[in-house]
Structure formats: C-alpha cells, structure tokens
Length: 86
Image (cartoon, rainbow, N blue to C red; front, top):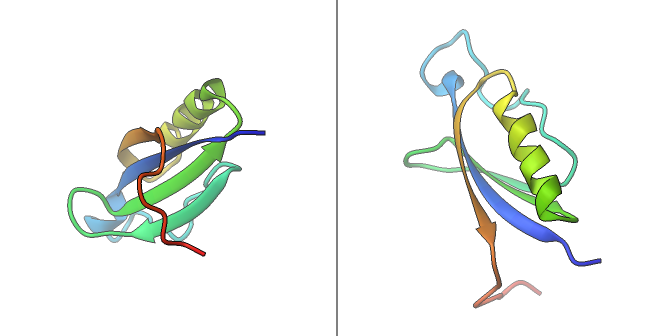
C-alpha cells in the first residue's frame, strides 16, 4: 500500500506559559512516524503517514483538536528528491 506523508508544524502554548504543555504529553494520532523539536516559527515538526488524502484530512481535524496545540501548518510530501537514509 502506498502511503501519503505530510509534515506538520505545531505551535504549542507550552513555550509561552508554564501552565501549558511542553509537547511531551501531546497525544498524537496513529500514523506519526517522527517528531522533531525545532527552532523558528513552530515548536515541533511531526511527520505522519496515512493511507489516503482523506485520512490525512482526518488527522488534520484531530491535531487541531489536541489540547495545547495553538496553531498548525501542514504540507503534503509529493515525492522525494534526495534520500540519504539507508
């Protein structure tokens, strides 16, 4: 089965308020392959794989509803140009 993948940038309130999550207790949906702490506009970058575009849309809805997630931005991965992983 071919999976569609997407990157999500997460802005968490934990970086701005001690009363909010720091990301360690954010319940991520099934299909999450990687989570990276990053600098810049977002706090986390999440790589997720789904069996269809409709599944990715459902993930977007679920992620937006996660407590502690203030804002997200997603980008669907179209095709790899360089892959240096073994």
